[in-house]
Length: 166
Length: 418
Image 1 (cartoon, rainbow over the protein chains, first blue to last red):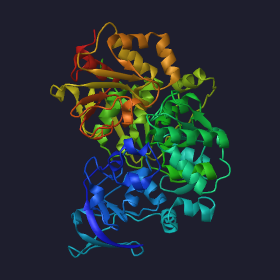
Image 2 (cartoon, chains in turn brown, orange):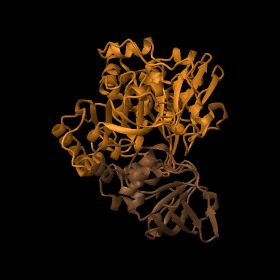
Image 3 (cartoon, rainbow over the protein chains, first blue to last red):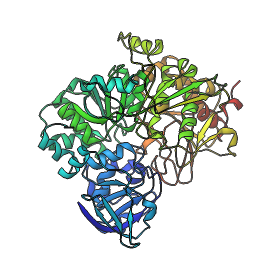
Image 4 (cartoon, helix red, strand yellow):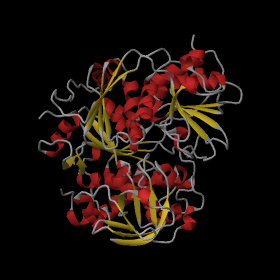
């Protein structure tokens, strides 16, 4: 789980309604189509600015609000490789891991929009190449979440393990 | 060491004695999915190769967020849910039966001491019935249907003690809006909350549910009310006899204890575009409104409709204002009909829509126009929440929403009350 990509920086309290509006998520299970509307209520045409592998960076409490799993799914389908934030809301954090989208709590004050980042989740390292500095991690994943992530998501994990194992 | 309510419930569901911070796999008593989250859960269940739904009789799928369907996309997802419920013999709540959380509680699926998950962030509402209930995503809903279990980190608990005597015109919604403004949207992330105090003791079930409904707006995992006569009566009314609940031990460890005296609390309003942007109504300037909405899992219960109708009786809503009422369930709708509340709403110029989520999530039944101000009893006011990112949503109590509909601007209910 090593990622290199460009940062797209957002602020605090980005809620799941902003990530994908209710008016789209109720209509279908076509996440490719839904991904075109990623964050459009606060950043029109954001989807068009994403190069696959880019990194979404935010302040505190990312993913607050609704429990919609469509939120991490559309982020993934839009080509974002990993989400960094100072903190995440509880349900979003679990959903992201369950759909195989890496999420990391770290000091995102050290990252500006457009910075190029190198992330090594095995070593637990985030490096801001544009600023030549290490980004401090705030927490690490519990083992079960790492395992789910390594398997590629909850479906693959459960297929392998049969049930939850702590 | 003593235990909090949450520690007791988790211990009872994982076969060993646990405390906050421990990671466990727990048995789930009952689960819920709604029409925005169940279709994806069904897809995941199929990907898992699920052949039967564990504990199927305690699985409730609800058509409420976008019901009746406003387009063919939603209609097809509803069809998918119906077929799944039929095939795996789960419970289903059809269009017009009501908002998922209200229906779940009315069907007696949330019992004191239970551990419940639902694919909706406001699943925390059931804590009003002295159980631990929390929101999950679609994959986890599918995982619980597949295994009957889910993993958790046993949360730390904060105690919130509410004392004092509420002033006239102040209700449960004002209390929770005030708390959300105080703790902010991430102030209690991952925590369970135990509520107690004089004010809670005197609060009806409907009022308690309004409070537990919105604990997630502070990031909390669950909000739990004490078990007492009010809880007992709720169950008696739905034909279930329950005499015992769960309470925390005297030597239980809380991560914090907060004491509030709410005797001076005035009506509260959350202003656009964040729920924790809360102000006492006296601090707001004159704000014209275009749409007033009463309903949702926060405030669509019978007490809310009674409060609104008592203020509207014999009056008309202001010219230029649209008012929409959505009872939270069919049972509540029928009761409101019996009590003449629906007649009051219609005579005052309001529109009464079918039980369900109404315009809360922006899929149908009252999308605001560009530049319009909405005052709503819902729990979220994010930009675009009601389907238009050029509208502005204010959150308030049923009393304040009704007073505002009568005056055409955000109004302290005291200005309209006799």
